[in-house]
Length: 134
Image 1 (cartoon, one colour):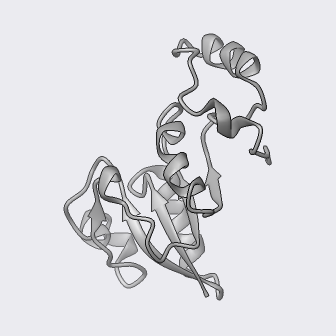
Image 2: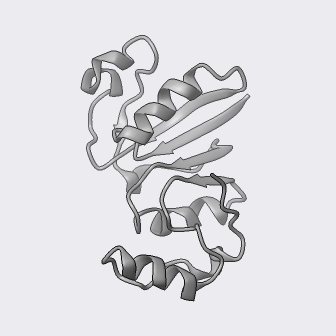
Image 3: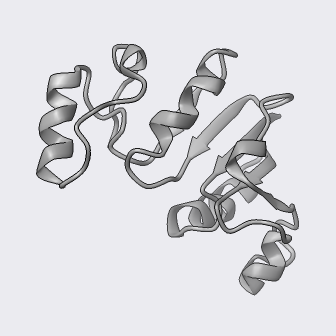
């Protein structure tokens, strides 16, 4: 059984992950975090009742202890600030944003610039370790 952390659990992607992972026979949802935090996920989203009742923590309090895989369901430029703490502990990260979609900072800069975001990548050392999948 793999223990999963979901960062960005209260957004559309995070809620979808809770639904999917709660039915996976080899995954246990062990940690939820989001900017909208401080309550059990099922009290925030009644359709989750009976599926998951973990408290949603602030992202900075999301720990790595006992976590086998981390899902980052965060907006662009948020995951790049979070991924390193998991990577440094050899925890695989699946990121839903565009933060690790490219293998070089120059490619990322073009992408970010086209979206009107800062073209600076906060974790450029992780880009060559990432794999993009769709």
